[in-house]
Amino acid sequence: MSTRGIRRKVLIGIACLAAGRSSLLGHKQLHYNHNHYNSNTFAHPMPRLPARSSRPTEDASAQSSSDATQPAPRSSLFVGSTEKTFQVLHAFDGPARYMTLGDIAKAAELDRSATQRLVHTLEALGYLYRVPETRTYGLTTKVLQFSYNYIRANELVDKASPYLLDISRRVGETTNLQELDGHEIVFVARFPGQHLVNIDIVVGARLPAMFTASGIAILSRLPEARMREILTTTPLEPMTPYTLTDEKKLVDRIQMTARRGFAIVENETVMGDISVAAPITDHDGHAVAAINISVPTSRWTRERAEAELAPHIQVAATSISKSRLSTFRR
Image (cartoon, rainbow, N blue to C red; front, side, top):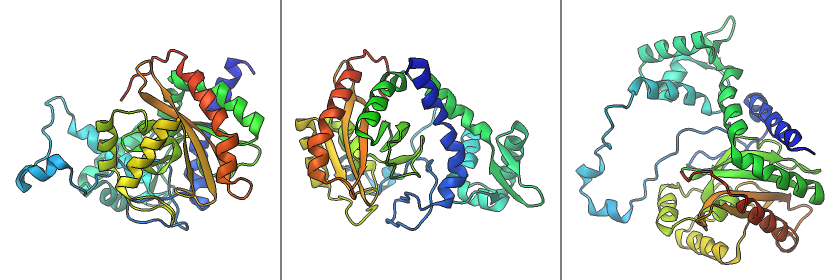
């Protein structure tokens, strides 16, 4: 397949985001709300702005309680109304497909008057629409243009896609490309295998980096200070009964991954799933992303996945890393 054909296949995947507004709410979906795991709840793959952990850092413990409650000073260039606009859009991150003004105001943590003006503006611009004969609003497909533009301009997607497609075809399993955003990983490319397991995960889906093979792989190639910062901001609440939440064990696992070059996780974010991942690094050796293979426990064991899939993913990650990526680190 030509590079253009591969790019087209990736961009077609963006349509999954549109389908995600409906299909993700119609199927059992990955859900983490930073409070507890629940395999029977519904979720949207675009969560709220990253939650802030309540666990104190070493520096924070040395500060007075008054200092700790002081908000960080903002630049005079910061536009508060723009922030509120995105708060309205993020109100739709939850399971509700359509929302009333009151629901939006509550979710966005804004007063009703401000919410009404912002919703009217977004409706006029084509990003929200009012459901006929109701008082509810929903997102339009226009919001997908941002996702499309990001994927289309993403050099990493171009470099990684041929390798992911090749692995998916050879082993018959699903391959993914993820980037780090805050304390979460974001799926930016996905090539379903012959036996797709997690049909609800689409491009744009997010998961806590600390609990995923791809996240662990990325963290294993970051400076220790950055890794611990992400650990501190991660709500260590289990997504399944098997989610590892002990801080020391999490750090030990990241360090072991750094030594052997790949990570493997089983049943920690999705029951019945085994994921094997390796980091993609820049010229300095710092991780910029990760690729993974996801397989079901019904057909694979952890030992078999490690023996047969880890070599594929490591070779591909190394090859992509050597492609002289110009991607900047966040």
